Image 1 (cartoon, rainbow, N blue to C red):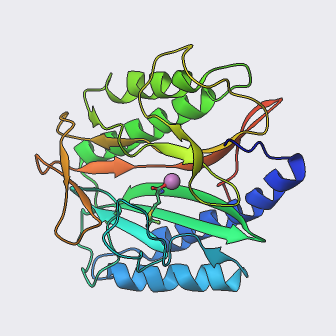
Image 2: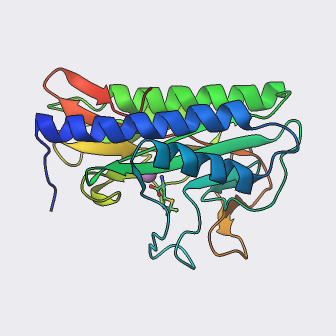
Image 3: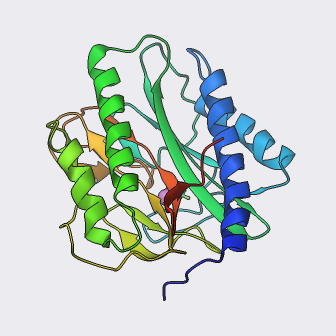
Length: 255
Ligand code: MF3
Ligand code: CO
């Protein structure tokens, strides 16, 4: 069942979205060569605790994960596309890091991801990140009342695949609200004018991931969580929680 949210409920999710954005800012500021992923997770916990919020990820056990999730952020480095565990791995200059975080306030969730390079970025990584951000922006711009779900994926794949990158549609976006993962599924690729009617009050996480190698293949790593590109190419994941309002899309996971 798809539950539309009231304006008051959307404000509650906006509060959770601010916490997510604060985690992104803190992790971005502290991520540097020599810092471990586990240390970044520790920093993220402090931000969430300090805001009086809860983690949407910690202990979460979806069908696609081997264990309850052990951290409050996903830290996906280089060829890890999604769900990288915050291990003792220490970042190196030039690593491409995606940080995904979910938080809840008063029982209302928000979910978002950012990607950036630690230290010096190669031109190829800068282009990959810039294209992923444009892909997400195109998906958000297509999340209009009166539109259709397929408009979102159509807009995103036009940008991402148009630039020659690989995409996947198994792990896309999702409805979000009282739970982090709600109906409906939000495909990363779609057909314009097809699918669910987009209506005011629908709140969704939109989360494209791009693979630099231009191929779609990825696999589960031995840790039972990390999804890694088959060709070893770098991958970027970005995500915002977005409310569809009468005035158009409203991003809830900005500072
Ligand atoms: N943004 C990710 C998603 O919607 C967050 C899930 S990570 C988990 O799939 F660790 F919580 F599972
Ligand atoms: Co999500």
